[in-house]
Length: 508
Image (cartoon, rainbow, N blue to C red):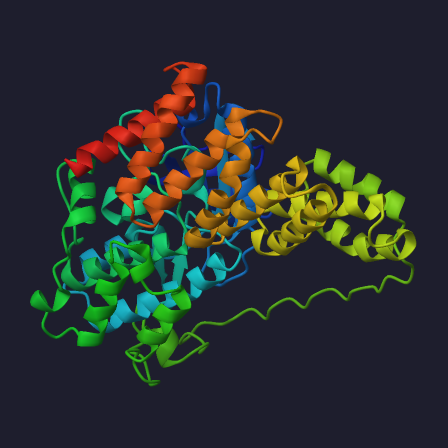
């Protein structure tokens, strides 16, 4: 991927200096010609988005950018723009003046354990906001965490890793996991369902590295690293640095638990443990890049630095009249055609009470709007809001047409997807297992692909929950059925075969 300095992307962003590159693409400093400001532009490699899956990858990329742009947190890099030019995908972000944690660690060896606690506490604040959406970062590592001049921490590349993964496996055609194996939770590398617990494991790896100077598990191959993640216990950091508090060592070991259910329940819980180890308020040294500074003097101005007053929000004009339902429905259709899903969600949420008042809560009009609302919430990544809507729709439809009604089963299936995305693998697994008999008995239009998809999800959730033998058995039986129906060259069969091969190698 060759990009020349001075090239203008999307008719607006003039590339200036290459500041990073890797397997997924390049990152440049650039200038926004329209607003005359410095930005960072990430270009994803053309070969990653070309071919048969190009349109699907572009769609997923735009969706991830739209969802992540909704997260409002000072510790998360701001997304300014996103799109595609030819075969390339581009993401325009806030330019962060600082250094990444990998460089910060290299410049301060050994890394003060108080700094480690301060970095981790700030990361917990970011992850709490991100997981509440819900979004899983999937690629948390030192290169994706910046320390700014005032010591505050900023997280990069939110949502980008998920775009480069397929829906059926986390392994590439070469058998290597996508992302950074040294920081990958076992369930992620094995192709299992990911959740907030996956990011917490990566945080444990990052903490171990900051405290000890090295990652807990390394090797010459991705498979070797994965094997160590799965079967070797990490070396307690106090053996390497006795001055590290026992409570901090214990927290790192919990974060690195092989079984996701043995890790802390949330980033909030991790923060509460770290808060006890944070330095008390006081006067910082004044040196830049000190991550304890935000805790020593919260929101204090920098020495000799002026701050620009924050702009005041524009006054909101109240709406005097109730919205027109028919007109709002037409507007929603137009917005969805244009890909403006977040705005469509807001309009649907506003007109539903009005439609219920005008037509009755159980009328066909309201039922149709509720279905559209739930589907649009899911497409917008708002799984927490979509879940109760889908459950209610499923129960109502089942009461009218029976438990085996295809529409009711579809609502339950989508509710299970929400549970999966919300980081509740045990609950999602239970729901998929309850659905499977209906699909296997071909209640749903006799389409075996639905059964195959549910079984695949069950296998991935079993991996996420650490039950590798059951996952192997589930996927081994599934691949035979897929090949019997579609032949050995079917993409799903090939993906499952690769996961089974990986599982077999690791087990061996």
